[in-house]
Image (cartoon, rainbow, N blue to C red; front, side, top):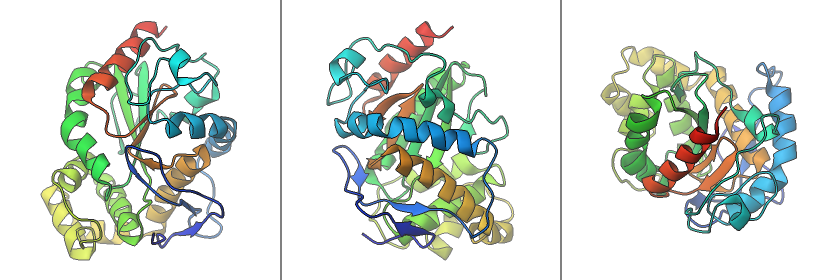
Length: 277
């Protein structure tokens, strides 16, 4: 698998689990000398504590508790369906991964929403497209707009240079307040990987479709160091957690892998909302 231009391959990384696009994960640190964003050290600590749990949780492809229980006791099964889920304690490190930045252009919903879904996506992944077309809008209408759910997007470009270009372009659209419009345009239809869809002209066309006003600024932002740092920060978080395929999700710390049916998301979100303090 091609390695994205801003990343170096991590030795020993292995391919993905069922239900999404997987492969060896190149890390990303951004330009030399870049400084950590606020809270980055705390998130790295949380990632270190959680990595072993997530490798197991995501490998089975369903809901699982990051508190170390098996899939059955956590309420999940291999296909993402299951019974009751035990919410994590308030001081659990999984909950530290939610950034809750009210000004984050790659997030939807209230910063203090009781349920936070972190979404790790490669824009060239077919399963990520299925989730975007079949599930995303329903979750926004039913939960985000009611103040129940916050969605925090993380770029995780695991499928080579064009995935990296897509991640940078999406981030650049977000700098003009059009990230989620770009998300919809980019994943709104099926396409072949490495087709040129996210190369310069293709990305510009998607940005125009998404309503990005200043296309020259968009092009400059796409190639900026800031874009590399932001994408790298997201990718490092996912890689350190042991995420092996996209789309992958953490919903109040509960792991979900793949383009599961909307009913499975509803079941989990409803339980976590009802259990919220």
